[in-house]
Amino acid sequence: MSIAGFRQQVVCLIVAMGGLLFGFDTAVISGAIIPLKQQFSLDTAMEGWLVSSGLIGCIIGVLITGILSDRIGRKKTILLAGWMFLLSAVGCAFAPSVFILVLSRMIGGIGVGMASVISPMYITEFAPAARRGQMVAYYQLAITVGIVLAYASNAWLDGIDLAWFSRAEIWRPMFLVMAVPSLAFLVLLAKVPESPRWLMSRGKADKAAQVMQVIRDPEEVEKEMYEMTNAALKANGKTGSLWLPAIRLPLLIGVVLAILQQFSGINAIIYYGPSIFEAAGFDSSNALLLQVVIGGVNVLATFIAIRLVDRYGRKSLLKAGLAGIVLSLILCGLLFYTGNTRTPLLLVLMLFYIACFAFSLGPITWIIINEIFPTEVRVKAVAFCTLMLWVAVWAVGQFVPWLLTTAGPAVMFWIFALFSAANFFFSWKVVKETKGRSLEEMEEVFMAPH
Image (cartoon, rainbow, N blue to C red; front, top):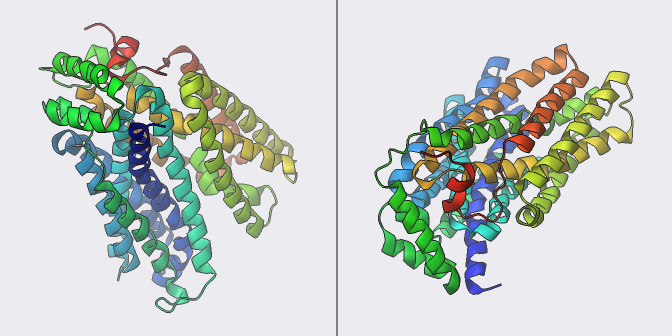
């Protein structure tokens, strides 16, 4: 690997840490909610508000990023997201009341929303075309690592005695742990350059060229600068509106993939896994252990996407993963429908589902959303697609507990299988392959003539 290639890897891994904080922040509440309920005597409504406040923050963060990123730059927006995570960690850990706790969770949610837009977007703009899929997949990998770290951190803290916090307030160090990666993220970001494509879009061609000379091999700089300059000239004077006819197809693809990623049921299985396993007849301690196993498989299978996405392409992995997702969901539903759930086959199918999601739908949705739009509308379009993803997260969160209670796990699995089958055909017929194409070439792939 050349020096420029090494720098590319380092910068993309640093920015991908936004995904790690995203995953940690969303998962840490799972271990903290029981002691919080006991200490503050939370009723059902207040518990729901505490959990959902983070989601409200996510939506605010997505909207803020859509406004800020084009104005102040990608790097400053990432730094702002890092500060949101740090403030949330400290605010939650030392919250004197439920009000401050909810406010701090909302601030963390803003960081999650900002990171979900800006981290994969920066990597997309920064990475070379030949390795862009792999490098954006680092972001999904970081999310899965963050989730597992939150589970592991909660379990470790729950098993030790701390001099600074009482057992009744074990939730405080659970939140405080996130300050460590948040600080590391902020320190490391000091070495990250601004996105050269954002610099070019702001008429700062000299600065963009300086960055490119550091992060690209000499033979790549001239070609990529030429493409960026031409794209900037073509974009000059355009309004950057999402409602232009040329944006309709990529926007349709981005929104549909974002929504159907969540309607594959991934969050239902990640967050309600213990309930599903208990419904299958496993005792609660084994159900929680199996949840940790699911998190580990989620991490490991993401490496498949990192290794293969730039070799075999986005569509191939997407279709292969969705085929496996549909099959596993149908069979899981069948096991629950027939009452044959006390079998290792259920665990095998659940792990197979997680693996299929982790190498396909999880990372590739983020990759495609971030690479299909031209620079002048990219932040607005990605923010809109990401907003639709978070709306889908909310809808699934409202839908799953009711569905498990009234219709049962079998029907829930089959509904998610139906949505995933629709995603398979959409990916097969509508989604375009983008492997190896520069961002400036995407107009040829996706855009209708003006």
